[in-house]
Length: 202
Image (tube, rainbow, N blue to C red; front, side):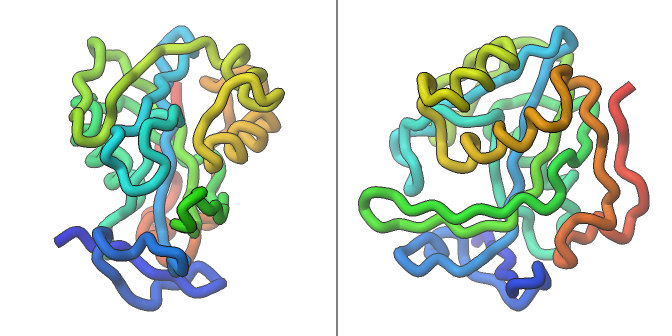
């Protein structure tokens, strides 16, 4: 059974809970990640969450999200999860917003409550082949136009994507040149903190 890492307010691991039961009206703070996948031309891969998802079904969002397993480095979790959801193998992965945190509430009261480092990745392969249980649509979009539409409210996206895009815009206009953050800035629960510098895009 897939387990989610629970966190205290300082981002330290304090236990685990099954993913199947963690999201409720009182969801505890837990560790997650978000990924923004770009092609060599700087286009962003966006995805539409499957209609069966417990949280924000059918909503367009960034390339992928997920939860690392206990003791799993976040970078490996990003590669694993996007491979499962989209059938893609990422060439480069680096954290760009290491301490992003958000809390959001659905209309039905279900809560997301995560420390969710944001990763930028590069993909040079063929068209993704999404798992329909996770993703019901994909599209490649020009980053600046997408980001502007998210910020001005003309493009509906998940609440975490909305907040992340605003912070990502502060890193510069070219997503392929965003600075990769220091692994030491990840939450204490992330094993990556012990592995030194993370890979950088060429």
